[in-house]
Amino acid sequence: MTDSVHGRPTMKDVAAAAGVALKTVSRVVNEEPGVNPATAERVLSAIERLGYRRNESARVLRRGRTASIGLVIEDVADPFYSGISRAVEDVALRHGSLVLSGSSGEEPRRERELVLTFCSRRVDGLIIVPAGTDHGYLRPELDAGIPAVFADRPGGLDVDTVICDNNGGAHTGVTHLIRHGHRRVAFLGDSASIFTAAERLYGYRRAVEDAGLPVDESLVAMGPPDRAGPALTRMLAGDDPPTAVFTGNGRITVAVLRTGHRLAMVGFDDFELADLLVPGVTVVAQDPARLGRAAAELLFRRIMGGPGAAERIELPTRLIPRGSGELRPYAASRERSCRGGFP
Image 1 (cartoon, rainbow, N blue to C red):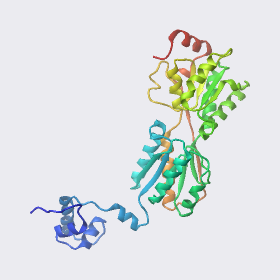
Image 2 (image 1 turned 120 degrees about the vertical axis):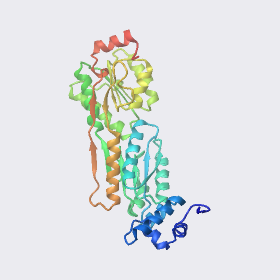
Image 3 (image 1 turned 180 degrees about the horizontal axis):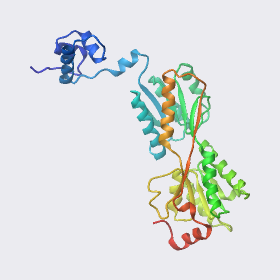
Image 4 (image 1 turned 180 degrees about the vertical axis):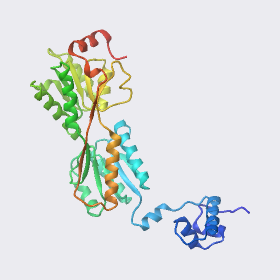
């Protein structure tokens, strides 16, 4: 006999197919005790034949949760943020939750719209990479019991925050160049209004000053990645050009590589194929997966009722020497004049 059901199968359909009461199906589906093994097997067989799927939304709503969280990042196409997103998804999956995600594009208004949209869908919690510093709009949601975690950058409220050591990482990278003989190190960073960019600039200044060198503002350029190449070209055309450059993120590093200018370089953030260039690109690497996991695990701890004051977790960075950051001033100059670029 073939069971025929129009539309999505329900528990009533399973009960009819198995010849049992609706309550018996409910007990089997929810793995509750008190069902005869033979009867349970009959119910499971009917479930398989009909293709019945439990209504998870209704189940979790009865428990006061939606089994979903909201994730707002800068740009899902950026490898750094896609690494964060995947790690958050992995943690959410272990907790039986889905992730609703969106990109703010560094626009505070878009961030606000995404967050409030997720809240209107009754997510259980939020992970936000802040695009701005004013998060007053989030206060009513926090007061209503929705936990939030700021990731990669702090926000404008005292909530759990997971960031990387931007200041220390930049200091390490610039110091590495100085130790290889460079006295004129340029800094190309993202917009100064971005927390991570400002922290990396501070680390650059600190490294230069710690080495007893003057900070030459003509060697500092801040702005979107597409302005990095022209800025470096202007610096190199000056009377006392830099012999090395520290780039503030992966997109700026790639923008510099595309200009054809080749000088000693350390970049903040690792990127694909950095080890295959000649010489390989020395980087200060963050761990986006670790950052995403830490933020998600902290969020689910709060969702489960974890008490305590807001935490601030700062993750370390690590220097990966590959060749470009180990070029000495003469070698870097010869690299520019003879090789014409990394192949």
